[in-house]
Amino acid sequence: MRAPTTPLRPQPDSLWRAIAAPMSTGAPLARDIDVEVAIIGAGYSGLSAAYALQKRGVECTVLDANPIGWGASGRNGGVVSSKFRLSFPTIASTHGIDVAKRMHRLAHDGVRTVEAFVDEFKLERARFEHTGSLRCAHTERALASICAEADWVRTTLNDTSMSVQSRAEVEHETGSKGFVGGVLSADAGTILPLEYVRGIAAGLNARGVPIYEATPVIDMSREQDGRVLLTAPGGTVRAKQVIVATNAYSNLTEATASYHRELVPFRSAMIATAPLSPELDAQLMVNRRSYTETRRMMKWFRNVDGRMLFGGRDAFGKEGEPTGFDALQRAMVALFPQLKDVPVEFRWSGYVGMTFNALPHVGRSDDATTFCLGYNGAGVAMASLIGQHAAALALGEKPELALLAQDGLRPVPFHALRAPGVRLVAAWYQFLDAVGA
Ligand SMILES: Cc1cc2nc3c(=O)[nH]c(=O)nc-3n(C[C@H](O)[C@H](O)[C@H](O)COP(=O)(O)OP(=O)(O)OC[C@H]3O[C@@H](n4cnc5c(N)ncnc54)[C@H](O)[C@@H]3O)c2cc1C
Image: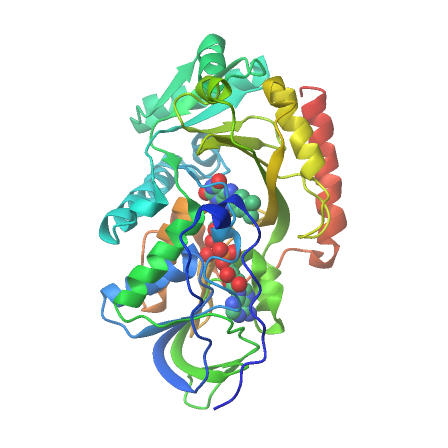
């Protein structure tokens, strides 16, 4: 038996970790095994793939370099949404109405998938609430644009789940005077992300699916019989098929780094205040929905156990660095001056996988390897669904993927320049937001 050499990185010091039930760490892989399908990555994508395989009676195993949910799945804002970064009218104008309908179905299937996991694995601790998501407009022009979209979705796709809110309604709902109106999407909600990912893992474990933590895949090669050989410090896995579900963390080892080149990783940061006074708590986010805004450098917020949770995507620098948190706090106070003297108790960040076409990518990189990644910051529901479709692809099925299907890997051009590129684009977006364009 080989001794694993990789120390387990702790879960980031987030509000989610502070309120989660204690969980013992799983064992690393410490022997050589053979399976039908091996999955790399124990976030929503990888675990959902394992779920779909287990349901079909296909033997599988999940390997993660870190603890379950260590990546974006245990760090995100817990906003469960039924949309893509591209709007449905934009999709229709480029690809036609039929494609827009199929994409719309996939988006809502994502929310149904979260509900199904919560029901099947009895994930009460994940506290999924189907309270809807309110998109708050920062200018009249932005409001007109999201109202037109809601109207289009209602008349063209027969979807009545979106409704317009006036300035006064948004102010009452959020407690902020910073918005001119908004659009409520009823088919959305909130969840505790770390409890959700851990709950799925526990449910899979109970059904006999092994999940090895502290098990980085450091090499991936093909055997003469066509099988894939995955090498980790403590052992190897021989598999007929592999699913790579490493997303924005794919560069943790060279073995999965080629999947990282599909993405432009954007650092996304979150802060959580100390518990609010009962008066403030009753005033802010009264319907306990998730809230997003229309600025290009979007902020989002929600109430968790009487704390304001506030997130944004303009945290530059590397993960673990303090950059970005002060700016996020200033942005929060600009929208909610009531929070000026409320201390921030938790700060953490993670990487979001952005893609060039603003859509997730699912496909096969060769005849034995399937990948799914690039949820563009909206992966709680989508990764829960797409991981299952990746499993179906790996088994040779043809799941409905509409525009998400991708034939082989297509690395982002000039990937090595991504960090300065991201800063440049973000600075331009911040300028446009500042001038209200
Ligand atoms: C701060 C933040 C806020 C967000 N907010 C929201 C939100 O509110 N709503 C929403 O819908 N989405 C949100 N997202 C996006 C969402 O969290 C992701 O889309 C989703 O979690 C992706 O899941 P995943 O399983 O694909 O990847 P991840 O959860 O990142 O999992 C990848 C896993 O792969 C492992 N790994 C990588 N390389 C290797 C290797 N070589 N060997 C073994 N293991 C490896 C990593 O350790 C990691 O655990 C947010 C993301 C961030 C970072």
